[in-house]
Image 1 (cartoon, rainbow, N blue to C red):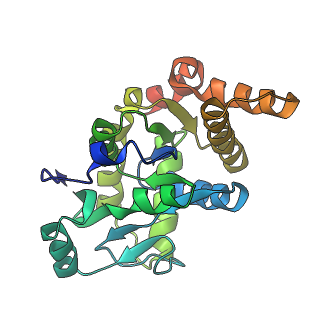
Image 2 (image 1 turned 180 degrees about the vertical axis):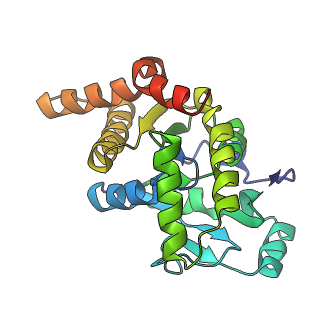
Image 3 (image 1 turned 90 degrees about the vertical axis):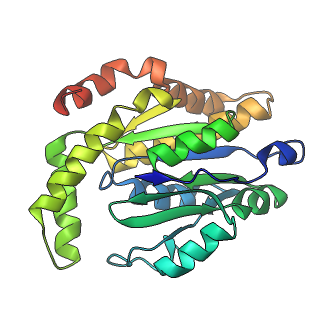
Length: 245
């Protein structure tokens, strides 16, 4: 993986005028992150989703401007040279990048921003914005992840076991970075993962704009608190063991 090293979004200059919350979500490929994010976006108001740019072709029902902006390698390289990315990376031979203007556009509209971002890209953004709320989504087991990867590959018309094996090895490496994230989710039940994500967003918003809590606020805070890394050891221990971590 190759990460950008050049200048990125002028975070320091913008901090004083940007009031929204930046949420970062990372997960190994095939963990069901897109499903969680799509449902979250349909349920939570005032949450802008940063649509990343990529040089890989669309998969299945993916649409231009919804999951990604699909561009050529030449176009992506031009954007790199024009310093248009907050961060970018090369993953499995394809580039992925977050446009610099995403933060300003969302926050100027009074919305929070959700970045669906690679582990190393998230680390790069956290260095610039340590106040960002970071969430790591884990698959429950390697077998479950392999099943999802094969299902996605069949939908694309080809199953390459060597590619799946490489993605499983990469997943293990990414999961090893879970301690860098404030919240940990395990996507064994989709509806529960979506509920936990929504609770985290609500709890973080309440912490930024405290008021008189009601019973529903207390319930959401309790759910979010259980997902904090420091409180997740019992839940994630079987996942770590399954991946040999």
